[in-house]
Image (tube, rainbow, N blue to C red):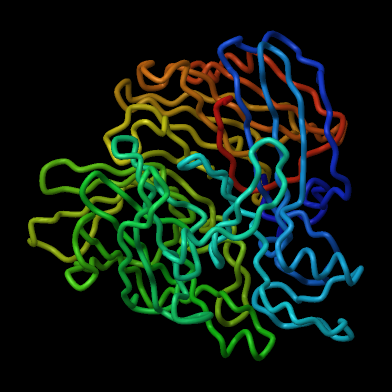
Length: 467
C-alpha cells in the first residue's frame, strides 16, 4: 500500500459502504485441503466522511476469508464501537478524529468514547479481539463478526491496550502494553500479561521519557522492550488545531528493557539516534545480547514535523534493520544495522518462533526503483540461514496487504506452510486473496480467491484455525 498523504489518487483508500456475505467464491488454482480456517483483516473504513481526518482514525471494518476443503467464502462487518453506534444513530459524523472533540454543528451526545477498533484482530484464549491502541480490546464473535463489546478481563485491564500484543508460543500467555496511561498525550505506560485461560496475571506502570506514539514493542523469552521514539503526542498541539502527533527528532530515541518477571522500577534504558519503527519482525536472546529485527525509518512517515513541514519520503521508507542491546552493562546505547535496502512494511514470521531466533520472515514490499510514495506491490521472503531474499511482484498498479503465515500443521518445521495476502487489483477495482507456498513466494501464488468488490487498504490480520 502507499502513503495516503502522498497518494490521494489511489482509490483503494476510500471506504466501502456495505456489509455482505458471499459463498462459493471463484478459486483459480487449487486451495490446499489442509488450509481450513479464516484469514481476518482489520482496517479503517469510516462510516461518514470527516474532512481532513487522518486515515488512522477511520471506523474499523473486519474482513473474513474462510477456507474449507478447497472452497472459500467472505464476510465483512463494521466494528460497532460506542462511537460507531452514536454516529449511526445520528446519521452523520460527530467526532473530528483523534481525541473526543466534536465537529461543528454535530448533535449533542453523551458518548465520549471515540475508539474505532480498526488496527488488528487477534485470537487468544478462545476469544477474537479487535484492537486499536487507545482503547480496550473489543470482543468479536468469530463466526458472525458481530461486536460483543469491550473486554476488560474482569477489570484486570486499566484502559489503553496495544494493537500488537505478543503471544508466547511456549506459555500461551499474551503480553501487552498501553501508552497514554495517565490520559491523552501523557508519558504514562502500562505493561502486563494475560494467561492462556484469559486471566490478567500481572500489571506494571511506569513513565516513559516523553509522550510518544508507541505502536509496537519487543518481546523475547526473558525480556520486554519499549521503544520510545520521537513521534510525540502533544495536548497543546491538539487543542490549537495542529497535529496531535508530530516528529521531534531532537528528543532522541530511548528503549526501556524490563525482565519478563521483573518490575518496571528495575527497567534499564538505552539511548540511540532518532528513528522510528511502526512494526517489529521478531526478537530473541543470544547470551548477554538481545537482538531485534525491526522495520526502521529515519523519520516517521504519515505524520508532519512539529513545525508543520512534511516528512521526507526517502527518509520515511522502512527497511529491515537489526537492533542489538548488550545487557552486560558495558554500554547504555544500542546499535542499529540495516540488513537489507528493500523498502517495505508489515513484517511477519512463523508465529511459533515469536520471541525465539527465527530463520524465515516476510514483508510487504515496494518494487525497487518505484516512484516515492508508491504502492506495496510485492512480497519478500527473507531466509536468514541461507542468507538470501526472494520476491514476488504483482502486475503494475496492483497492491498487496500484510502477508500472514499459516503452518501446514502444528508440528511442521518453521516456514513449512502458506502465506496469505489480500491483493487489490487496480484495473478491476476489486480484491483477491492470494495463497503462496511460504518459502517459494517467487513462484507466485498457487491459488487466488476472487472477490467481486475491493477490500480497502487496512492494517493487520491473522489466521484463526477452524473449530
